[in-house]
Length: 462
Image (cartoon, rainbow, N blue to C red; front, side, top):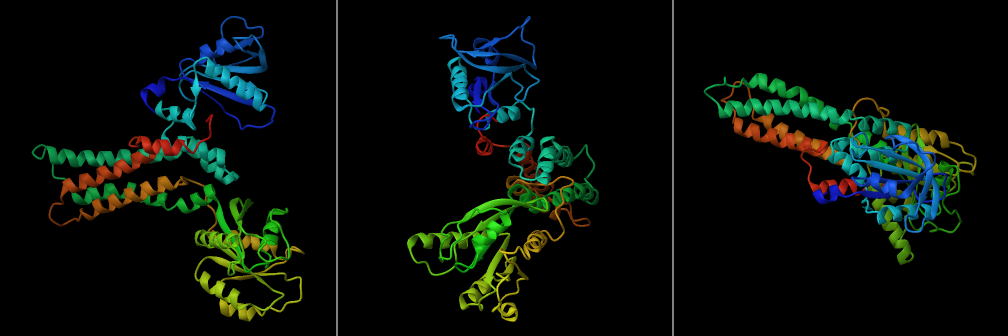
């Protein structure tokens, strides 16, 4: 954001568009109060507007004096606001026409349309939030489970940012010791390698522990990707509907009915799960089916867990054997389907074709469905889901932590007690890079292109 942009007053609709009880138009910047005074006609106002008070009145078009809507308006004066600028929030009826008209009136008074995430970007630039907190705003909005919300809320409170900043300060202190020894060798004692290595070890271990939480954090943020696969007409869509407890996918006896991915979210044992119903695996009959099968194979490569369905009422086909062999060592389950029918499938033949655990279910009677749900979570999270302590949920954070650990490992390799004096200049360079990587996470070192990418994921009005 340029200095000119920062001086602008911005406005946006902050609530989802659609019919609802309340919609909010948010205004932030130096002209926010003037815009409110131009548009708002309060009822029974005695004296001046008080900050952080709610006022009842009408939004009026200054040009025509037309009353647009009865609203509640809050004026929040800097610096005790989300952006640390003057902020006005107008609560009106949540009709699209009303919201757009009020927004247009704010723009006519000198505001400009806010970019996605610009209110939170201003909160970051003003120092109200560090970058981990700013990113946590989106995590809170997108949280699908109580566990995910709990972790996001802790990030929003600044717990992760404070921990990383403390570690960064430790590395800055270590770097200062090295640079002092290099710049003033006559005035400082020679750095003891063993003691310096010990001082480096504790924050290094903390970062390793934090980086190791990313797998759990990713699952909380994105959910387990569970792909339902198998030959055409084996019952994949029926299983999806059964797990969702509603009809989401079309089910017919015609092979090849599902030609594209059908994906839905459910929650199992507090874990968000993305279920992906896929096209049946067979030689494509036409270009549309070919594209669907291609997407199926792409999803299989990305899956955290594959549920491969086989029809228990039929013998195991050569095609199914080939699919199971192709799945190889991927995490998954061989799901014997239609166990409510007379069984032709020999379990021994299935066991010879795959090392996957085998489970039996019926979508018609519900037999085995609850056990299947438990297996989905149990096979993926063998130790359960830990949501206590700091947890990394962002791939960006994890990548910078990995980079930081790489630089620290190189610094540590230069420090060998009992060997000739290490090349402290190289140790300093590695520490500088490690500190920079941590600053990329918390925001001290981040570039404009990264900020644009992060805040571009936000919705308008946030």
